[in-house]
Length: 284
Image (cartoon, rainbow, N blue to C red; front, top):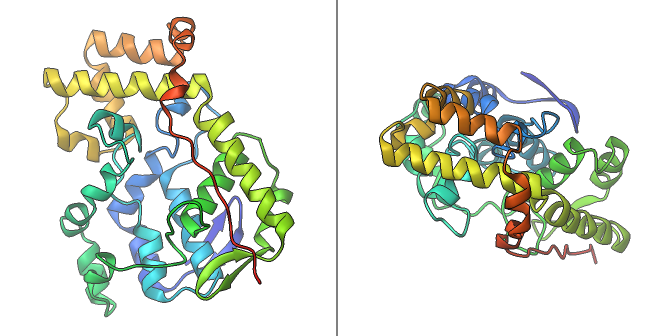
């Protein structure tokens, strides 16, 4: 299968990856937005968990990750609910890890184990394994963190495709972990990560959309308009279900139109977000 990615261009993937990409759990991610409910207030920020997953796969593949790590990269976000990290606010997961807490259950209740078995891979490769290119704790670089930083900023028109390509040329592995080749590249990605946190995640309109969506989902669950399993559908299915009730329809429109934004902004909502910094290692 040939993949065409907005950031990285065209690349080919092996049959097991192609079949996983065509699977229902991966296809669902085409309708789950990376930024949660941000697309409701800014239509240009409409990139998806599907695009991010392919991007993470590309980075792991490009840096020579094993087939097992490539599979893990492709599937690492398959358990994200509708509206992505909004679920963390709904279920009070302060470490933003709700999708991780249900990952094994989502995988095991899908066609993914059968696909892996067909191609000679043990589904256990997805659980309890450390894949050093795919994931690292802050403040280190990893494929997941690099892709969402570049993709979010590019989609928000904060960096250019030329910036992305220039940075990619600086990535390499040292002792099996992602590093950059120069201090200049390390400073650039640190600055971009700061911009992502300060000007993208904490942008008041973005915080407004995700906070009000979390409140709406909580209310929907409390009133029985939604079941917990509904959140494993996609953004549009959940919106449609909420909009069947007049109150839900009105509250979705309030998000879209930023109806109560001035009052919300005055309360300093962005201060709810924890400060995160990136200090990438430079190749020695």
